[in-house]
Image 1 (tube, rainbow, N blue to C red):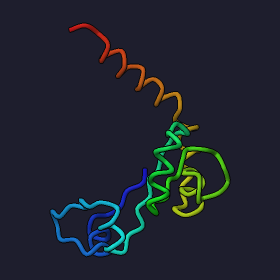
Image 2 (image 1 turned 45 degrees about the vertical axis):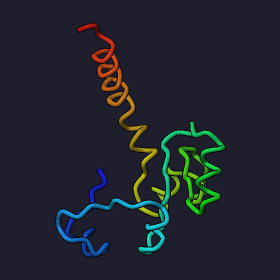
Image 3 (image 1 turned 60 degrees about the vertical axis):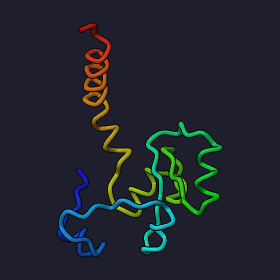
Amino acid sequence: MLKVHFHLFSRIRGLKHGEHLNFNITSAYARGYLPVFTVLSTQIDNDIAARYRNNKCPVLIGSLAESPFHSTYAFCKEVIGYDLAGFFQRNSRVLSEAIEEIIKTLLEPE
């Protein structure tokens, strides 16, 4: 599981304990961040993705493309060093069972 230690994260970001990262794309750029939307599936409306990209905000989609500039999974593997696609493949049975149980619970009459 990916986890970022708060003290390291806060030092890098200049945050004090308890502060939150609430800001929009414009303020993210002003603070020196590169906001990126990551989607785990390929199901994103092209108009919505284009709107973000036109506003200088990259959108990574859940394709298995090899480019870390387009694929969430390639980005995770090449930039972060974690095989996110492999995680989902290794855990697909457990994840499917958990999702099915949640859906059953939500759809049961009270």
